Image (cartoon, rainbow, N blue to C red; front, side, top):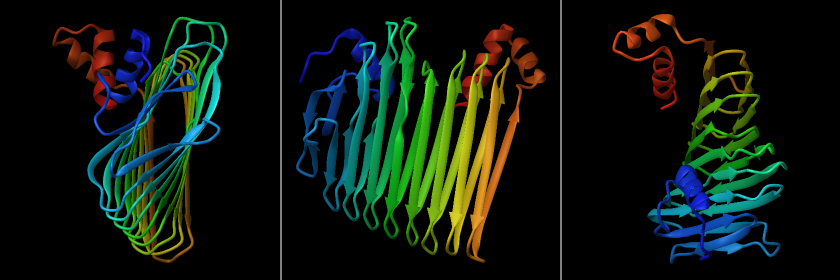
Length: 308
């Protein structure tokens, strides 16, 4: 494993909660190169020949194991596209931790585009955690464009935790999913933008099998002059159930656009969308200020609780 400097170690803590080399299977990517890789008996990580991604194969029946594939970037001017494919065998139950941290102290933009495809076998269970984080005092932007495709076989399930709280200047998140009979997708997105940042999240979920279900929920805060767009479309092609929700706090000169999309192609498709955008209630701030907090501290407490 390559030696990481203190900035790279800090980024790993932010995006993957890693304080040391993880147990189990992992691949750590730093500034466009592999900084360390380890497979296990049940999880094989195979690098692509071009060096721009991985194939991860998880054996059927694998339980209580994890895969960590974080990316850190500390050099200004890097732009890369990485393609990772995951094949999860039948009856497996695993955790996959991804995420990218960029520290840009230069004047050139740094960008990481991660394209992930998940092929989840029958009766398999996957929890996927993806965190994005940016830091650095340079004028160059920190840009992250994740693309995710999910293919769930019969009775498979995937729970996705998508988090972006600080420092990313521009992001376009696209997620597509196809669900077969009795499969289940759960997405929990947490997002905060500030300054002139822009964040666009697009979800298209195709409910193809009878008894399939999807629950896509985004909670976000737009501060300063930042812009957010949440575009979620559910397509019900069978007797299925689907729910999308956008719950947002708008502050300062921020802008938020919520775009619901429900398409029912079956009489037994039950689809629901909810959206709420508003400012922090004055009485909430006053109540916390009576406990000794300043107005700014009260706002931060409310936002932190909202995004948990």
